[in-house]
Image (cartoon, rainbow, N blue to C red; front, top):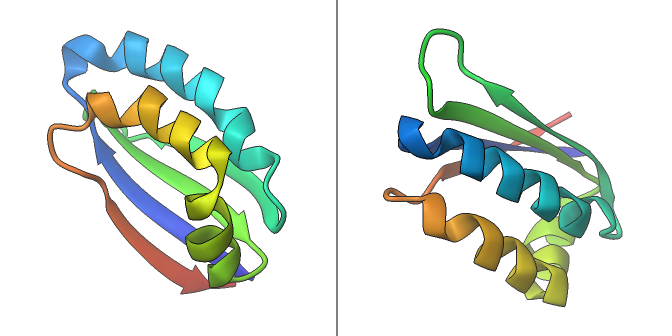
Length: 94
């Protein structure tokens, strides 16, 4: 199992719109083969900063499966406009 760890920074003024977009985008990742769950957690005391945690069966399920899917195109269209700086992504073994 792999844990995808994504550090996200959003303009605090755009957080409500981002959260609404994330709610619409989440099903795009949850339906993927190899995805075992995802959580977006706000950083305490830092409005606009989040960590996204997604559990995958393997790294390939994310990098080759999801990233090459039609659902990723929808995910990107919904969320990428909010990123002034693209999120930092790391992977950890569970």
